[in-house]
Length: 87
Ligand code: FES
Image (cartoon, rainbow, N blue to C red; front, side, top):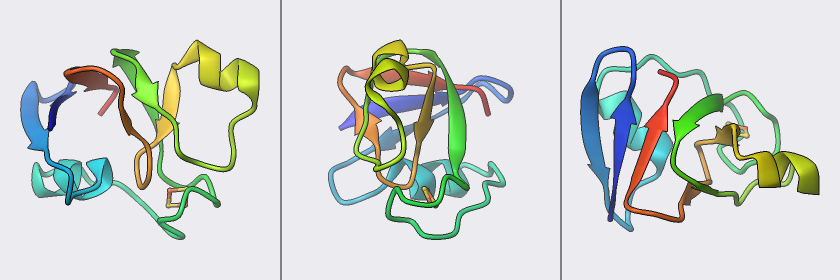
C-alpha cells in the first residue's frame, strides 16, 4: 500500500493492491473524469507534485515517464510510499 495526498484538499488516502489510485481518490471526494480505465485514452491525466509514479499506461513516452510530473491514475501506481497529486 501507499499513501496518496490530494494537495488541494489536504486529504490523504491509502491505496492497497486491490484498488486503483483513481478509485481511491474518487472515494476521497475528488471529481475525476475517466473513460477507458486502461491507460489508453488520457482522460484521467493528473499532475504529480511529489513522489515517483510507477507508470503503467500506454501513453507517455520515455522522457515524460522520466519527468514524472503527470500520471494516468486509472492504471499507474507509486514507486514509493507517498504520492502528492495536483487534485
Ligand atoms: Fe483512460 Fe485513464 S481513463 S487513461
